[in-house]
Length: 488
Image 1: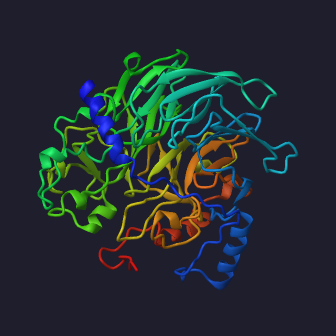
Image 2: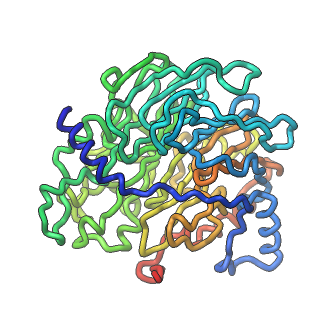
Image 3: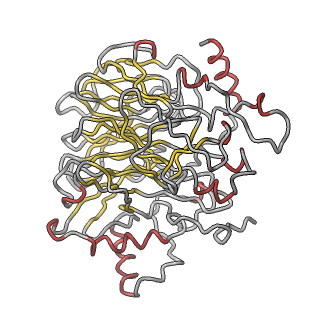
């Protein structure tokens, strides 16, 4: 353990050069640029423009609409909606003791007119993520702690000092989000993500700039990171020694959810980066842009999903040996668990919600919505993601297809760099009436999505325009060589 601690302290100095997201101060509605929209008629384009203005900048399937609940409360992460409609937001701040925001609509116009900061705990990093309501408590996390506060009927702000449930005893690192899920039997699942791509070992790599980067073998980060730990949801002052390592080999998980349909834990995993940078002999710049997959997974106790020794190739539908451990893009790593399906590379799935309400058409019930925060490192190809996706389920399993449910967050089609995107989808929560709430991380804007059509007739016709959006630069898979950006 001491050697691991020393490693993380050294790693902290390296990672301080990483830049946080840039904050946008604009309060204007998004007006996406549609230079490549050639498949729609003039009337369709006019209809889309009108729909866009109505929906707070979002493009949604026909008969859905979006209301802007609040425009800009500051950089934010996850959200939770109470059964009376109150909204709780985890803010991205490492200053002071007020890291949460509570919102209430008192005149029923759909907009929050009360906004109150609260907290009473030290903010320790901008990757503070979680906000959950469970059994009458508001659970939330900083980068190094998990807390809860009791909710009181009729009162917006939880009463009393936050109870400290879980303590991360190690220094702040990259990918330090503490996402939560509950199994309804007293178990609380907490993510401890890994701060590297593939447990890189520069000493073993040597000084040759053309050498394939090597990984530490075995990777000591897996002793305390790269996994999910299970804790008691009500016990105070727990450390990892008090918890149980539930699953391992998971690089970075921000979206974690318990599915009550099959009483199982699900997650969306961020795949690693830098295949080309670490092994240019085997992987091109295009390979690096489209590989490896982000993973949608069902997690069972004892599962090992192969990080850092492997990655998931969603084109081959196979787990491949990582180049840092002898892989060449051909060798498989069959000994590790597989995801339910692979998702587009580097899209950064940051939240996941299984829809349980009755407001949306039946096809959405029991399926999974995913907030794709958007890529940062697909250069020289355009950045991609920045949407809310949907995974349909049949017979308790995903069909293997994914859909665009909400687009327009970025405000532009061709995203050269992450800072070009006006908004980045982040959090999801279901309201008491079955509406879907969406948060974004740059300014703290929150949308509420409702359905106003005939649910019995909703189908492929209503979804057709959303399917066409897959041809857009920030959603489609780039063509090798052809879609490279011209860097000025």
